[in-house]
Amino acid sequence: MNKKQIKDIIEETYDDVLNNLRVDKIKQYFDTTYTQTTDLKTSNYDEFVGHIKTLKRITTSISVPRFNEFIIDEDQGQAFLHYLVLITKKDGTKGTVEVFAVFTLRKNKIIRCEEITQTIDNENLANMGSVNE
Image 1 (cartoon, helix red, strand yellow):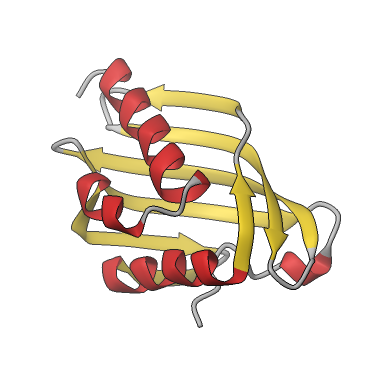
Image 2: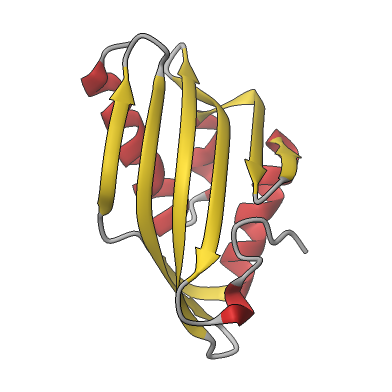
């Protein structure tokens, strides 16, 4: 995969799966062998799907307005991202979570994500990167 392909897949994934919480689009972007480690908690593909479903159920909006950093290693099929997530939960809780993530892609699908998150302004959002109820 070249840099443009990697960039396009990541941007489309964020638009469909995170910003719009389109559970039906997960299979388009993520391999079924997908694993994600967020703040030292590892999830498989099915657990990730559950995470997105939980976010859809407990939030009114999630938005990644832009990527602060977006670095691509074409040879390794990886992308490093740094960004802020603006969150509003259905209970009225609002805040911002900072994310540093490394994605690995193979054959036009995301196979791995390793990320670290931290809340910027609301500790009640500390588990949003891995919440799965």
